[in-house]
Image 1 (cartoon, rainbow, N blue to C red):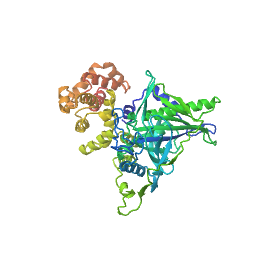
Image 2 (image 1 turned 120 degrees about the vertical axis):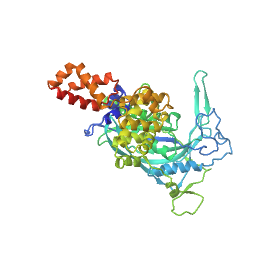
Image 3 (image 1 turned 90 degrees about the horizontal axis):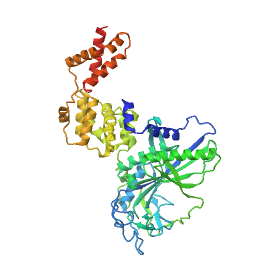
Image 4 (image 1 turned 180 degrees about the horizontal axis):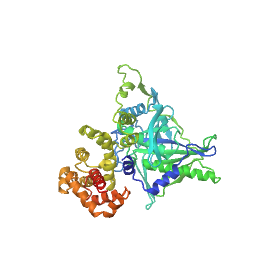
Length: 528
């Protein structure tokens, strides 16, 4: 059952899976001259606040061009930044969840560079003393077919800092001009800089997935990568055992979790080919082309940009109260924020395995799909008689397959939890079988307002479980499959499956096959 649900959950074609295997295969017993890959991630997470980091402009995706722009966002002389308290609280809660050391005093800096979408000529960030440092996150790595057995990986977080986003340049190639949209200028960001503790693309993708789940639970970021709310940069290098780290390349703005795995896997393989053929790796920035599945050179990094960092004169130091008392000093309190941290993914997996009795593999899948997990938590409360393992397998195997069939994400599935609960109860007591479940789920995906029992009645989907009817069906099948019966009598035990297949076909797969197999064995042994 587990193998079936895994196949349903990971809809990856054979050629694609072979590519991933080839690119990510790493021997556990590395030889001395084998290449070792090193990966580090930098993640920009857009904070889910109503307004921008330093102005009162609305923080909203897909607004009309230059609609959400204040005087400060457009760098009008004389305007001053006002720090958004909610953004600071979100960053602190994220830092606490990621086991960071909170700095009771942090500073803001100006990072200077000149581009059309940065009106002031500098970005306000935290370079010298960020809001938090030295965190860590532990997460599972599990990809059936690539990483067969789940294992845990811990990655250190060097720094978590607040900074403002820049605007967006719009290039019109036909008119040969560029336009600027400042809606994004000043959008609040958390930059998370991870240490190079990862080995390959699958570990990197697993880290990003864990980070997404964590940030969503905290409410810090909606993590919609398609909207640019979460942007991932990856730094990759290779070296041989006992040698210093190699020259790294950076892949900018990877747009999905799957692309994180594939882009890093490709870049590792590309660097190995270059080095094996006597070439040298260039310190450069590359981009990932999801269509060609290749990384492409953007620019080299031979000349280090001089950002001329300087303290931001218009923002005082940010103080965090680390004391345990309740005295209101007018500054943010660490201990008060700590009590608002929700249950984190690692704790949820621990409960699913140790208290509910699910396997590690199933627990990882459920936690990685929050909507699926919500279904599971609701149904186990409604269906006490159905074992949690059956509920979990049903959701992963049957529901996910039904959604994949019509190419919809589980997040937009309109089937109600009550309907799924009813289906599971009917399936568990033998009123319907897995074949008819698929028909019911397909119907509900088309029209979620239907009643489950009405679908079963109208389409005659009830499983045939009556003992007398099963016996009659088996007797007729034995009479219609004399060759298979003869083979069974001569010692070929598998011939019984040919007769069972005949019964499944003539009953439109509605016969209770457990009862059928028992009755067939009984009748065939009597006739020996």
